[in-house]
Image (cartoon, rainbow, N blue to C red; front, side, top):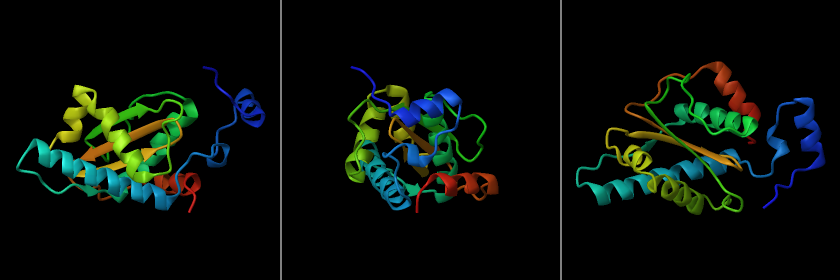
Length: 171
């Protein structure tokens, strides 16, 4: 199955120019991103309750979300699935790649799809079901998704990360 890339995108790639949010039509708005995080946290709560009777509340960490989104865009720009070892705002991270046709703007379905994809891999499943991770943030671009987990809420985030987030994510 071939990949179809627009001519302006090919020119940008050949010139080594960075991709911008407008270069892809599959990025989430801030509202959609928050909905995705709420849906994913709810799925985590439900799945953890099935696995254990001692389930703690799963909360979306908005401070952690800034870095999650910025890193997700970095993977998209590089077209490279990898982990971010430079961001200290989280204790667990799992990353995945969507195949063609899996992206949807239905946040409930997208959150379920991300959870289910990680569920198929025992190490990723262990991270998702780890009761120690009370805080979560998740991001998805057209090709990649990232879920980050924390034992505690992120109290600080760099202004540089916030600035990058604001440039990348449409209001």
